[in-house]
Image (cartoon, rainbow over all chains, first blue to last red):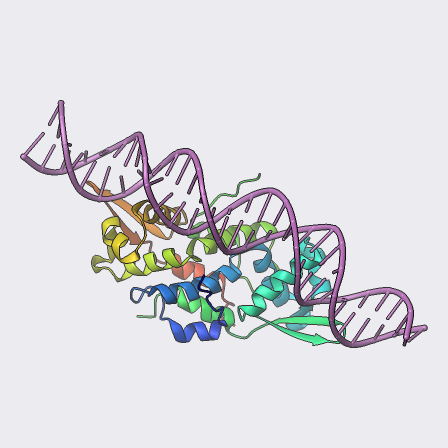
Amino acid sequence: MTTIELLPIQDVTACCSPVTTEAMTQESAEVLAKSLKAIADPARLRLISMVAAHEGAEACVCDLQEPLGLSQPTVSHHLKVLVDAGILHREKRGTWAYFSLVPDALDTLAGLITAPAK
Amino acid sequence: MTTIELLPIQDVTACCSPVTTEAMTQESAEVLAKSLKAIADPARLRLISMVAAHEGAEACVCDLQEPLGLSQPTVSHHLKVLVDAGILHREKRGTWAYFSLVPDALDTLAGLITAPAK
DNA sequence: CATCGATATCGACGTGCTTCGATGTTCCTG
DNA sequence: CAGGAACATCGAAGCACGTCGATATCGATG
C-alpha cells in the first residue's frame, strides 16, 4: 500500500489550490482529505474548541479527559492525530503535556474549501 | 443506535457557532463532524472540484465517472452523500442527472471551522 | 532509589466506510 | 411497446477508524 504522508496544514496549502478553482488531482485530493479527516470527528472537534476556550488558550490532557467523557488513551490518541495534522501544538512541561492551537492552521484549512474571493 | 440526522450545511450553521469561540456540546460536534466527513474524502473532493470547474458549473454522472476512475455505482454513491449533506444539488432532466454546487454551502462550512473576525 | 502520577503506546474488538458487481428503475427512441 | 441508455439501489467484501484495558515511559517526590 502506498502510504500518504500527513502533511501539516501549512504544507497542504503549498500543494493544492482551493477546491472550486479547478479540477483537483488525485494526489492533492488525498492530501486535503487527510487534513479534513483529522477534524471530521466529534471528539476531535470538541477537543479543538475546548483547547481554544480554555484559559491561556492551552490545556493539558487532565483538563480535557473528564469533560469529554472518554478514556485517557482515547483522548491521547485524538490529540496525537490533531498534532500530526498540524492543528494542535504539544509542549511538555514536567509531567504535564500542554496543548494549544497552531495559529492560522484552521483558517488555512478553511481557505482551501472555499471559493477564492472574486 | 441513535441515528443522527445529516442536516444540510445551512442548518448546521444554526446549530453551532464556530469551533474556536467556545466549547462545543457533544451534539453540535456530531452534527458538524457529519458535514465535514462528507467532504473529507478524496473522491468527493475531486467530484466537488470537477463540478465547479465544469462548464456551466454543472455536470452529469457520465461526465464525472471516467476522469474520476471509479465505477458508476461508486460515483453515484459519493454524489448522493454530497447531495444529502447539502453541498451539491441534483436536477434530473430526462435520462440525465445534472449536479451543481449549492451556493455558499462550502463557504458556510468553512466559516464554522474558522475563528471569527476579531 | 523506590514510588507515584501523568501521559504515550500497544493489541484487540466492534463499527463504519469505500468500493464493486448485479440488479432495479426510469426515460428516451425506433 | 420493445429495446437501450443513464442512473439509483442492493448486498457483499475488504479495509480504516474509534474505543478500550493493559502496559510502558518519564518526570517529580519523598
